[in-house]
Every structure is written in C-alpha cells, then in structure tokens.
Length: 170
Image (tube, rainbow, N blue to C red; front, side, top):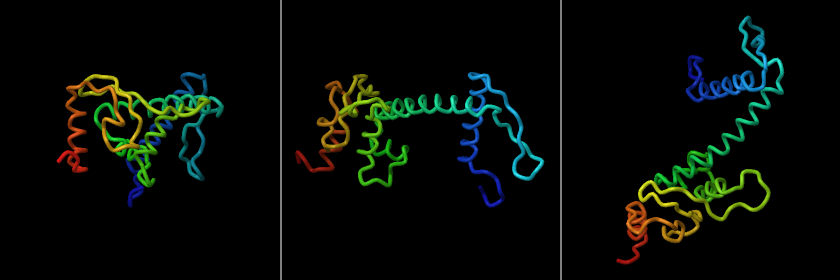
C-alpha cells in the first residue's frame, strides 16, 4: 500500500484476478456468492457459499495459466527475446544462471510423468521458421537454435553479436 493507504497497482491486479476466479466459480460451477464482514467493520465482501467451487475454478485457472506461461515464453523467444529476459519476467533473476532456469522451467513437461524435454520449439518472427531451441547452455546461436532460414536476419544478427562479443573471426 502507498503511504496514504491506497493499494498498489500490483495489489489491484491480484484483487482483479481473485475476482475473476470467484466469478468463474459462479459461472462454471453454479456457486453462489454471499457477503461476509471484513474484520470488525460494517464493510462486507463477496465470498463463495461453497469454497469447493472456488477451488475448482482456481485449479482450472492454474492449469490454464501454466500453459499460457509456457506459450507466452516461447512466443517471446520467437519474437527475439532472450532466455535471460524471460527469466526476469518469471522471477528468476536471483538465480546463478537465470536463463538456464527459465529454459528448464519452460521445458518441463507440465506435471506429466517423464523427463523434461531437451528442447523447445517456437516460430521465429523474423524468418517464419519453426526453430528448435536447446537452451542457453552454449554461447554460439547456431549451437542452441536450429531451423532458422538461411536468410534469417534475426539469426544473422545473433551470430554477428556473438562474434563481436567473443572476438571470434576477427
């Protein structure tokens, strides 16, 4: 909260998501809302008469959100964002190798049994090709991303940046 007791923008977003989950419980699982007092005040807030309906809506939302995290992370890679940038959004900045942690998070099989994938695929916004990405374990772009078109401007720029950064080919 701010100094004057106003909620932060992040708090407002969290409250909005909670409201949406409660609304989904009403819409999808026939829950009914009742009002309950907030603390020892006359102010009330809406709650679900059957919390299990809210749990059903929250679990379904969690599964959908997890899929969206993966999809948007891969879309971000396709749009030219790095694994480090994806890591920052996912909250992995404090890890030793945030890009690696982000890749491994996205490459998990979403709770299914079996090992994680050793690569992920995304569509390159520059060349339109489906690219296999094995994660940020190597520094050369051609070793971690395969499938770009030979004329892909993004991949060429990544290789040129790598050559500049490493001094290779000078």
